[in-house]
Length: 204
Image (cartoon, rainbow, N blue to C red; front, side, top):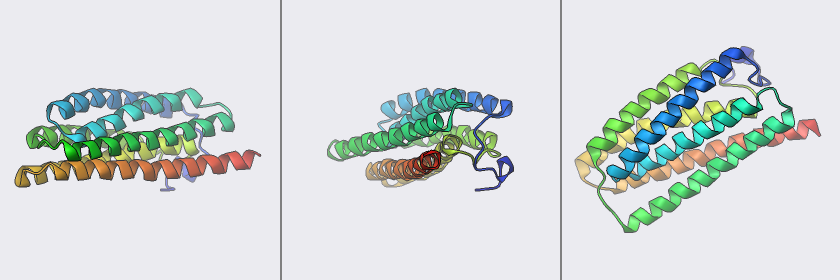
């Protein structure tokens, strides 16, 4: 993933183009949070609700990313740490909701689940396309890319899960996808926190 921003892992987001891209990505994520949360609740899909939380977290943390651009490495790395730990918090929420649903199983609406996931997938692919030249950079920039990539991967999995729910009439597939998304959050959180700590050590 070191093929953008001039292969510069020290890119700190100081670019008018990058700022514009972040505003677009924030708008996309905020809109999809509303769509997926309402659809997830209405369609009784834990996977859609988990993905909606990811959209909400992304829109908020991208706003934080905009705010810290141009600030000191300490401020930027602390912002990245906050984003990393917020992903851990979201993962725990999703795991908790998934465990609860294991005892209160309702079959999700596969049609709603699949249709909304496809819309979300296109929204995420647009975000990934916009960010394609900014995959690498400091922990703050890197976290934006990882979150957008997670969303795209998650929606592909949800589309596949919707097909599984349709054919099997089982809610367990939906819950398995929600758990997978939680693991994905934890994996990205680990990468973000590790890079942020490394950047802080360089400054000390």
